[in-house]
Length: 528
Image (cartoon, rainbow, N blue to C red; front, top):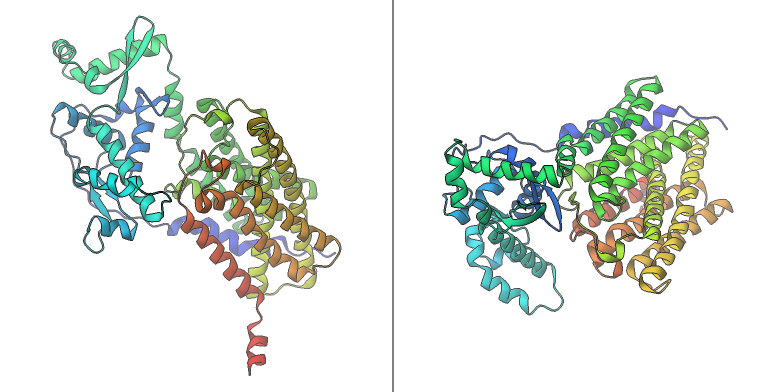
């Protein structure tokens, strides 16, 4: 079979993906400068605190909690660490310049608070007064709808805000010989300690905190600093930049070596990202939605490089880079849907060999099937808006079929391993849980497509849109069970929300299939 030009198919989509970051929304606004910050300096971000069932740097916790409360990285010109610190100091009677606001995106929730038209935030100072009414509104709900969930989220935000402003959320280490007690900041910064430190230091509060932290690190260790350095490196953003550069090099340079070097650079950075999360959490990074998205993109690119090397085909590198770019964009910009926080596992997920093998196999299968999805959509768009010969179409169908076989085999193996894990954890191999059911539906769909292709029942021009559409079943099994159904034994460890994202994905994919496969000229002539 005559092989088509390897670049002509991937040039436009690769270039579009590589420059997409130039069109990401941004704004530069003059911010009000806040001068009064007391001792709340950014270097406090390195100190250890205990929160969420584990010890972590204040910088990490502050970023997570301020993002959860306001949807922002800080307040005006202040960092998350400074904002969190100043909020905590309200419990000491100090004047705080922070007037944090919570987002109210749900229309019915906006009506509940009687917000002015177009206003989508509510000050926490007012939200605290609304707690009794919120509690009454959510207490009697048996099956919560989207409005009830929005109100429950605001109630949870209000509870955390109160805990911070009462000084009970910031727990600092207090050493007694070799024993460590985690106490609230208000009890930690006792008046007698501050008075004594003031005799020898112009910054007595910082002196008290860092002297105790130094004692903690000498006895317990400074493992928390690993997470601090990891977060400061911003490896997901570095990975995205390398991936986009690799895609651009496929278009701009004839020499494939540039794209290959950048691809291996991406693999190296993402490997470091995964290793860091393993060292920090002490477990495989596959137990929440953020980690599955991360591992899926990494696994797809890794598999694409291997298969591309074995088959001596550059198109696999394009598929891997394009899908990896999609997952990295979600990790970097869909932070309202994916949480990068590292949390302790529920008991059933701990120390379980079958969990790790099952989830790893399933996520790798999603990555492999995503490669076929990327190429199928690319071919459909190319056929619709340009020219493609039958030989070229058959050539790309062969590569789609290859990734489809890898993905379907791993999906089937993952389902079987999941049954073994279910028997180990819950005492039954299969229970028609929503996640189990949708995984089986996806597997049956892909098996039918593979069988139809193998027996020539499905011609090339039908095979391509079927592969593109079949990935919607994977998205339903992966995201839909947690974001839309939000039920079943598999619903722990994942975020809520994201229904808008999934609905948009289904709409866009369906639209692409219809636009690229309906012959409008023939349709128009038949109507006339």
